[in-house]
Image (tube, rainbow, N blue to C red; front, side, top):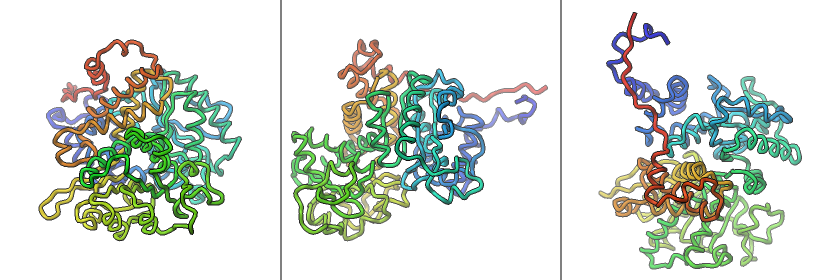
Length: 529
């Protein structure tokens, strides 16, 4: 832009504060999202500088809960190309489509969605791209991944949501989703092409439908550098929070860690993924894998999941109970009274599923019950924080998937935990990139959770927090990345031999040094002609 087009005294003003004020002047979350999206397009360095200084305020706009609204409406708010669409109609030439990405040689991490299960909002088709964009913004803010090395991808495979097929402004291919061999063939070609075009890139799958999430993670995890944040990332961050919550709960009850029982409401990809990750809590407490599995119970729309249920989906069989053959238990309070859990976790996307009676039943069984309503966004959350505090008389140990404000009650300030995947996936990504790991192993994800659990400061422990404060996210991500790198080295999955030579303090310092920072904002002076 010609310098003559700037106001003569522009350089003497604070444009960062001006931009922040403009964002804050918007009344609706979606309006703020659209404004920030435009700012990133106009001046990405300024956008990321503002984001790093105002993460608590901006992350709920760029990601959950507002990103869900952005996805639902994306065909109507679309303004400019932002990510890469790979269509089912590109089958046979996917490599060429991927190679059209600018600076593809710089690609280090991609977030890939097919839009089939965005948050708890269902099949949004090609409208799912903002979930990839938002996730990568969090990689950049949380772990200092360089923006030019990120690749947001939406697989445009059609949609089974009729209102989008009928919408004249819908930006995706108008057809039902592919099934079986057609889908598998597309995914096989896509993953092979990704490896050819982006040979050093880590792929994160995001918001695939439950069956496909498990299927494609297992299909590709030992062949490519890939992980699924809904399954592994969510599980890891909840393992961390649960570890700290169990410590608080056991201090009140005297119960040994291995005696905890966890009841899950919700048995989709996120629910079963979290449940499998929480097995590590019990095995690290000294139980055998089989004993650990016996401490976890799962509930779906039909009630307590038992092995004798007809037509049980494959992914639900792992935790299906074999020790109950009575009449079906369908009421959550009845199930709680039967199981007597110390912890109740929700990944059901059922708003207000944890009623006052449910909370009080948990309190009757435990002096400090652990209740984690983890469904996103807030409109699908199983329990609001204010209700949790009131109904439990402040005794609940709480963490949610979406953010809630702190509460003051009877002179006591209660600070909610948020099981935000941002605590985990940026560090996993950074550690994987720096170590050049060939695969993301279960042990790497487990060590990430342990590093997060151990990252609490003394002040945060005194405040009885289960997660650290998000304002320290880069320090937290560095600790997570450190743990991931060391575990990759232990398993001989790393290709960066140099990092093996570094003592711990030097490696941690290198991780911090590798974090990208937006260029220092300088008040530019322009010569007016």
